[in-house]
Length: 457
Image 1 (spheres, rainbow, N blue to C red):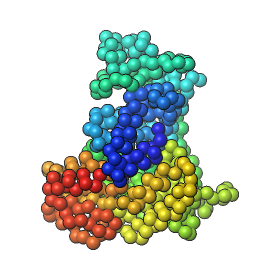
Image 2 (image 1 turned 30 degrees about the vertical axis):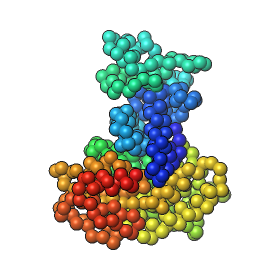
Image 3 (image 1 turned 180 degrees about the horizontal axis):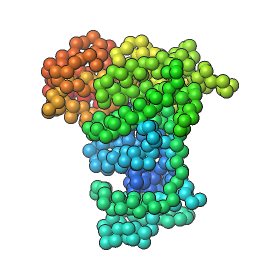
Image 4 (image 1 turned 45 degrees about the horizontal axis):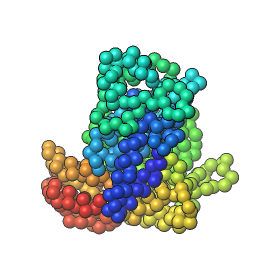
């Protein structure tokens, strides 16, 4: 799975109105989530597939893949209403909480592919094994799922749903299989809590909690954020990783970027300005320790003593590059705070990064994506009737990576929201869409808001 390219398609669709680009994302995501690369019993996406059908996985599970899966599935669900995407979000978050959460609330980095010296052994099934667990219910389960042994495959078959019409979850059956699977020898877990990967999953959990109104996911996001925040040193600087009592300092630039983005996502969810205050501190440390003096940033800190050459970190891997994450995080922080200085920093960093990326042939989708966000950043402020949130329900159907969304109740204080060049009337329901330092006149009805957001997407 290549999230930066999928995001590039989605942003291009928003920019051009080409709905076919969104379909490429939703169709591709559907194939992954029905295929063998997804764990249909325990939830979560494997690291990669060895074939173009998403059938045969490398069974390692990475935290960053699943964070990005949640983000993309939210967009896909809002676009299609397809239950598959909602179910996979729920299952994947269940897996995160069950198998990846560490004491203190942060998340472990990965699960190994192997157990007992055999790749995938923990995850594979036979019809005999399934029947032994499910009994008479096995035939119903296997009418929706398939056990596949492709050419050259060694080991037990792979459980997939590729080619079947998705007919909902089989909760009773999968719970029984999951319980039976727990008696097997588990793959090893890498218990390092990497700051940047935790930032990605915090953002995803916060977005899912806001989209679905799930308080448990909000609590999980806040716990993880508090765990990373508590790992800082006496100067307020973050480590790159934490493993038990051991902390690895100094942080990389993408650590700060991912946690700034996480803070903004939690602000969207909670409207608690303390998250923005923390994000401002991290943005200042990012400039101090990683800034190049010309609007860009180095990957490594100026305080690192073991780095002979400082590079920028422009090239995407399975996650957006450090540079891409910095630009995107600063752009979103600028929108949330209304701070023109942060906006200028984001715009300058984007311009410098584009100058480098435009000369490259591949691997820079993240920079183009974040530059698109910086150039088209927006803020939507909604005041709604908390007993009947008609406006908030409309916002849910039009998520946009370029936009920061803030929803507060009618009659509440406006102190938590910065409105550039406009006054916020919290006495009555309404919605204000702002771009840069300019806000459009408010709309007051759900129909007006839907027309406004549909025109933007």
